[in-house]
Length: 477
Image 1 (spheres, one colour):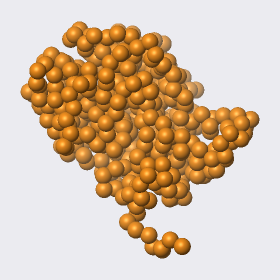
Image 2: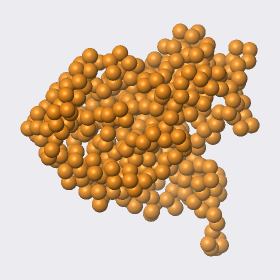
Image 3: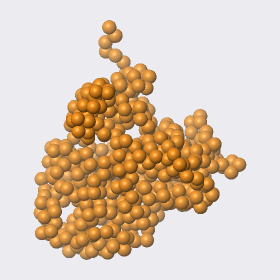
Image 4: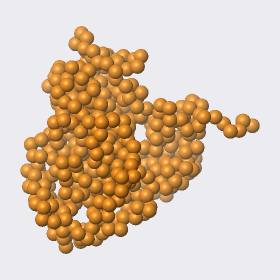
């Protein structure tokens, strides 16, 4: 029997699992997909928000500010790239200026540090390429950027290294309460746990209904993004937002921690919780509004586009509740969910403690994890030392991102171990460059097949039926 089962291996579920691994507990993280970080976590804006947007007194406000304050230390411990580049909310007229004043006052009440309202001249000094019609801005120096799926992989890997278990391809189909514990059923599998944390993203309302809680609903909000080449990454230095609406923060323009330029997202409420399709209309909207925000964005240098789904709850706030003993919801965690994730984890652990979970310190807990990109970021001398010990680090597999065979093998052998091409991509950045895997994918498939002990044809892109190869065109010689 497990002490705690966490359902959903996104950034929130991952952070909760890591926080619980600080204690002597038997923990299991359950995920319906073939890898972690497969929901909203793998496709969002990658922003650590300062905390001025959420209404004062809300859980979003409280946990955003606390999470933002925690994030730099968490990133350093987990070896995850983090950059406090600051954010700007730009306005285009008197109405926007009034909204910016409201955001400023709200941010002060929420405890956000160093906020300032800028006039047009001050704004242009910070960002020379800002849209010509922008007249003012709210400057939040504590805003930052991070890689959300890298943070999730690292937090779950760190939790596993500290004793937590991960079960993939475990879609929860039923939950029953028996003899003071929960029986959690998947396809032909059942586990038992004393406590459950529901962090299932857009499916969290369905999980809650399994224990009789129908107090909230969650619907998906689709957001389409366009990612540009690294040579565009210096067009802006801050994260540029529009003044927000009820549908979100609008189209942003931001550098990424890996040096690319990110634009988007759109914001469209939908019903299908699996619809991640991209549309011509969505991209047209992103391009049009981006051009108003920042001049000279060269969309001809686009390298990929994608769509993410935000889990929008029916209450307007994070839904962190305990409807019955031993069951805790972490639902409706839309923006600023990534920013708040470390604080949400603390908050959930406190709820579990108050519910009776005995928390005894794990004296062997180690919060430190080696960076996934330690080789590429090493000096020439350090690289030569590594290659002298292991020659696979001297073999380039992904030319666009300069990723070596050694790094790919290390990723495949490190918790949580990837089982498919996209899993390797999220851990190493192989396949993320200009050719989007056109040259390196066949070699990565070979490495995965060898390391996993499966046939070349059985390697998938992202699990399930996403096979890339259905047979050989030539027989073995």
